[in-house]
Image (cartoon, rainbow, N blue to C red):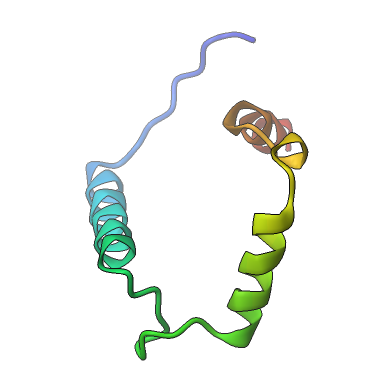
Length: 71
């Protein structure tokens, strides 16, 4: 695979960093919420199913990257 040059706007990177910081704060505080401090029933179900999935069925970051770039 060759090299690629990607242009990224500084404001987009700043917004992404703010979003990641917010997610980190929420996760570290133990409050994963929909403004009420609780996961929706759908999210609880999805989380339970994801935790049951063996690591061997997970995709690596590199596999996801390849899937995205293939489109």
